Amino acid sequence: LQDRDFSYVEDTVQGLLALGSIPGKEGKTFNLGTGKSTTILQLAQEILHQSGSRSVIKHQAPRAAEVSSLRANIGRARNELALEPGVT
Image (cartoon, rainbow, N blue to C red; front, side, top):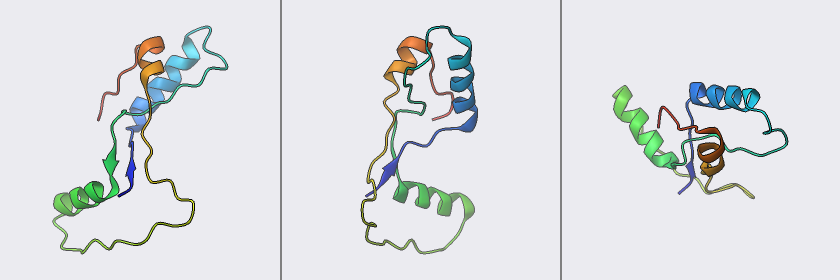
């Protein structure tokens, strides 16, 4: 199963604003996200549940070179910027 770290746009904007306002962070890499992964299947099931849809989820084979898992390591953002995701 594929999974992703979905982030709320306002949390990402807050992270970018923090980076722009704290001196000495130039040139460093900061991952912004929740640090939690959600499978694409979980997301699809939640969309069906919330919408009341009776659609059927179709599974397809992964595409060549497709990344199966993406989850942000937000440790540096937590430690150096005191950032925590507001919406997870």
